[in-house]
Image 1 (cartoon, rainbow, N blue to C red):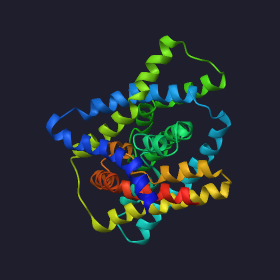
Image 2 (cartoon, rainbow, N blue to C red):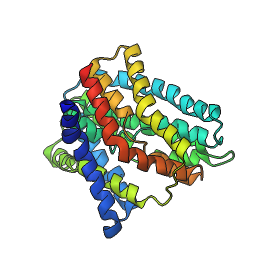
Image 3 (tube, rainbow, N blue to C red):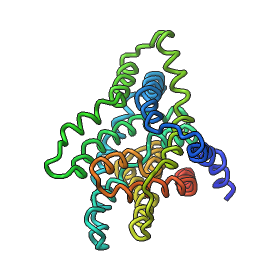
Image 4 (spheres, rainbow, N blue to C red):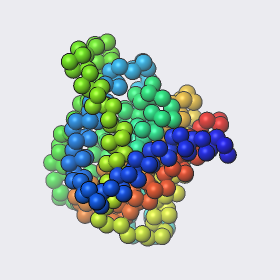
Amino acid sequence: MSLFIEILTQVTLPIITLVALGWLLQPRLKLDVGSLNRLQVYVVMPAFLVHFLSTGNQPLSVIWPVVYFSVVQFIILIPLGWLLVHLLRMRPSLGPMMGLGTAYANVGFFGIPVTQLAFGADYLIYQSVLTALMAILVCTVGVWLLAPAGGSRLVKLRNAFETPLIPSVILGIALRGLEVELPALVGQPLQFLGSIFTPLALYTLGAQVAAARAVNFEALPQTLMLLLKFVAAPALSWWICHAMGLPPDITAVMVVAAATPVGVLITIFAAEYKTESEFISTAVVLSTALSPLFVTAWILATRLT
């Protein structure tokens, strides 16, 4: 119990405190959440990824197990959520949303700070690569699942890939692989910008939750979503890591990442395609609020094994 409280107070609650700050101040400050998101996606997060990927200590070979794991995880988790919607006779439109909500976690804004506090900076390379892969998979598989028949899916895919997130990961890995050290004139500003990623990301997440316009709780679907997100996803991720023979430290990072809240990116596509936007917005709010207990529990579980 003491270890659980230690993890809760030193890792997850500090993160939630910043999320809560954004949630509490947003109604008073009325900051433009879209501008905060654009600042994160186009400036701060790319700087963070380039700096930490290019200067880390882990060899590049460690990224390949993360790539394989991410693909297998999506292949298993998306059909699981969809199948349960069918078996429980819920409305069919919940199927793809439940699948995506199960598989896609907030590995960027929430997962990276958790990894930094719980496991250390050396493990950010795993989380950074996982963040890029999740974005790629959601922007491809997610758009394919949610876009209506006859919709301009190729245009939406092109727009999704116009953000600098994926190029930043490629650039950071390339600099590491070629052992190129950026000059101070470039590297120092990247480091400064990257250093504000964690607090700004968490504050922005809280502001997003506060600005959510459509929150509508449905007992059975939301309970299923939370069980899939906080129980099934990390447990199956642990099993996948074990089956792939991944080392315990990488397994711990992947399991805890799977236990982070439902990713906010899905709400953007849900609103765009008018597909269960109220359901997924509510799922983001609930999973973010409950995440301290479940994320802490999974960090504890990985440390005790």
